[in-house]
Length: 122
Picture 1 (cartoon, rainbow, N blue to C red):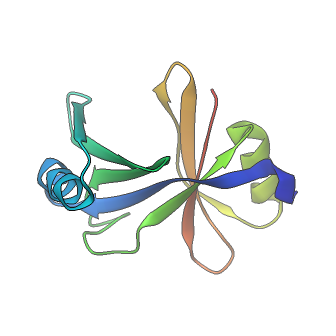
Picture 2 (cartoon, rainbow, N blue to C red):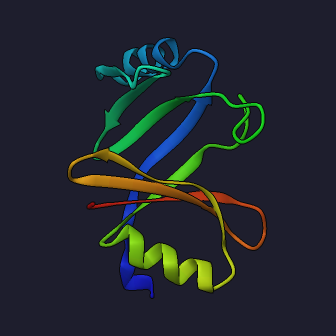
């Protein structure tokens, strides 16, 4: 249902060096880069007028550097929207992942091969 979608929440870019990419974009956009690590990888973000521009380590198998960015749709329920889209013909790509206590994300592939994400409350 279209009402599940509340607008674009985030655009994920895949980079060989997420912190350097984020700092470049932060300088270009006049913002600040946030850099975090989960102990195995480093991730970075720049907030642009309510849309998060995220930088994720490139992964040659699933998300190569220079590949298409992944648009994340803000939804009221990642679980419910994900289940509905899987039933409609999408396939699982990554996640669901807990970003923090109040937020989680997942990535799906539409029937035409486009990777996209869902972002909402945990």
